[in-house]
Amino acid sequence: MIGRLHYKRDFNNLRVNGKTVKRGFLSVVFSPSDNSSDGIRVAFAVGRSVGGAVVRNRIKRRLREAFSKMITKNKLVPNGDYLIRVFPEAKNKNFIFLSENLEKIIEDLRKDNE
Image (cartoon, rainbow, N blue to C red; front, side, top):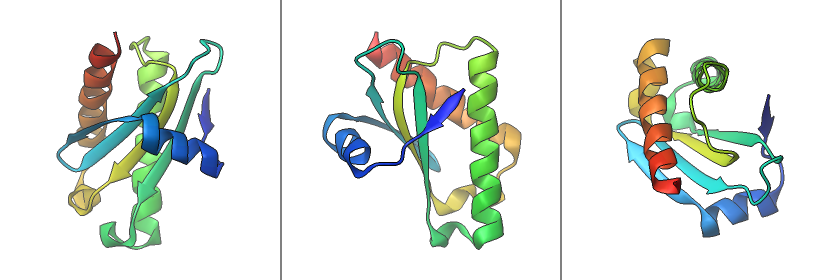
C-alpha cells in the first residue's frame, strides 16, 4: 500500500535530505526511511503549466498506478518518501511511457541507495 505525504515537515525532510533524479519530463526526490516498517509514501507535484485539472489528475492517477504496479510486480522499490514532479512535456504521454520512465528513475535511485 502506498501512503501519502501530508505534512510540511515531511516535505522539508525531502528538500534537505532527499536525492533527486531527473529523467526527461519527470523528477523524483527520494529520502529513504530509517525504519524498514515505515513503507512507501508518495506526493505528486503537477503544476498548472502541465494542463488543466483534468490533465493533471489523469497524470497523477497514471503515475500512482504505475508505482503500485512496480510494487506488486516485486520490483525492488526502496522504502521511503518520494516526491514526483511532473513537467509540461508529460502532458500528452500515455501510461506505458510514463510507467517506463518512472521505473528507470526508481531503478537509478535503488542503485544509488545500495
